[in-house]
Length: 294
Image (cartoon, rainbow, N blue to C red; front, side, top):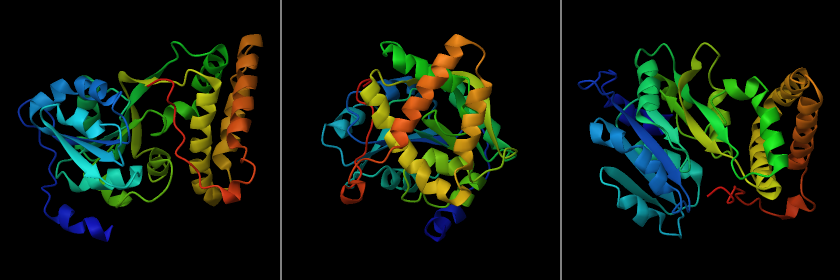
């Protein structure tokens, strides 16, 4: 936290609205996102035009022209981060703005102006320290097994109650004080979620952001391997309690043959995603991500 103290000290802690528009910042870490970053920024056009919200794209280790594409969007600040690291991008984005609250947005997620307004408004009073908009899965074009997995996932209450999984979450000034800087862990949203009690965070009933799911089984497994690897780094402390709760909620969601089938598909994918690859000690983990929906 010490590295951020001077920036906090210079900050006016008020969350005052300018006219009818909230103040704040949107920080978008982007690694080789040239195919989707325009779509994400176009969804923020109205927000950018308010003039009260800093939109920062932190391009990290990009080799596909992401910086050039993002720079064409007027009103967006584009950062060059040499290291291909989401953590480095998030921390660089934090250093590039003085405004609060802050929405941390994945580069392939679109958020509407009304949803952002609702999230920032909820954080203004400082009663809540963290919040995120609602989200929905878009499984258009996905295989039938992938669709079954996400049907089961949608029936697990815990998956809809945390800050993670939507590709978008926001922190107030005080919430970020608790965080300090982003640590070098996979799964920043999972890490941030666990910093706050249920009373300090909320999932708001906003217009949902759209999370485009993987289209193929291979792509889904790539995402799950990364997710479970990151969660495993953090679950060593809690002894895997979150996985046990998810299994209980999954079993409780079964109401008939279709939901039982979906639950079985979920378990198979979860098991395959958690399995460590052969010779894993000799291989440096890659940043697995879904390319099928980009």
